[in-house]
Length: 128
Length: 128
DNA sequence: TTTACAGTTAGCCAATTAACTAAGTATAAT
DNA sequence: ATTATACTTAGTTAATTGGCTAACTGTAAA
Image 1 (cartoon, rainbow over the protein chains, first blue to last red):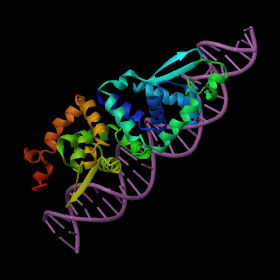
Image 2 (image 1 turned 135 degrees about the vertical axis):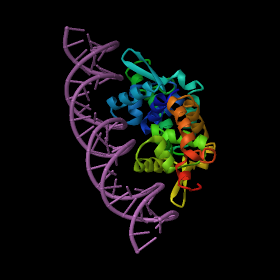
Image 3 (image 1 turned 45 degrees about the vertical axis):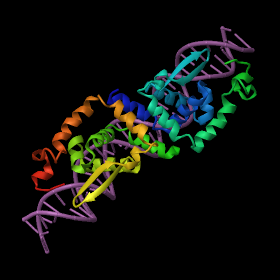
C-alpha cells in the first residue's frame, strides 16, 4: 500500500458516522441504505456520500437488488493488509456507548429474518 | 477506548505529514522540532500544530531540553490498545516512496551521533 | 403508463483543517 | 543587558468536509 491509499483509508475511518456503519457491518453482514439512514438518522444523500467514501477506500462493497442497495464489508477488509486496522477499530469501540446502542437499534431496524414485524421492507411485503 | 478518543486518533493519522512524522519516529526514537521542520519542509508553526495534535491523540510525547523540544512515540503506542494501529500503519507504508525517501533524508538530518557533520545542532557545537 | 419509492447527483452552506506570516515566550550566547 | 535561537500562539486564508434541500435516475407497483 502507498501513502495515498493509506490516507484514504484513515480519512474514511476518521468520521463517527462512517465508523458506526463499519461497526454495524461487522455484526450485520449486510445492510441496505435505508437501514443506515434509520440507524444514523441523517439524510439519504449524506448517507450515500459516506458510503461512497467507504467504497472508494475499499472498506465496503455494494450490490443493487431491484430498488435497494445493499452494503457489506469488502473482502479486502479480511486480508492481512487491512485486517489489523479493522480489528483495532472493533476492539477500540467494543464498549463504546454509541456502538452498543447501535447494536440494539439494529435488532429493530435490520433483523428482518428474525424480527420481521419491525422491518420496514417486510411491512411492505418485500422479502429482502 | 470510546468513540471520541478513537476518532481523535484516526484523525491524527489521516494527514500525510503527521504520518510521516510517526514513521520517522519509529526509526529515529527521538526527533527535535527543527529536524521535523527540515524533514517535512513546512513552517515551524505548522509543525508545532501537527505535533500538538499527535500529542493530544496520545501518539507522541515531548520533552523540552534547554532551547529544544524533543518528540518521541508515546509509551501508549506500545500498549495493546494502540499497537495494532501503529503496526498497521508501519506495514502499510513500509514500501511507500515518500517514507523511504524520508528515511534517507533523516540520516542527514537527525543522525547526530553517527554523522555529526550533517547535524545542524552539532555544527553550532551543541550536544543534543 | 402513470405514480411511488430508493438512491444518487448537484449545488449550497457552515464548520473544520492545513497552511502561512507576524508577534510573543523562553532560554542560551554574546 | 542585549541579541539570537527554538518554539508557540494569534490571526488570516484557501481548501476540505459533513450536513442539508432540490432535482434526477432507475425500478417496481398500481
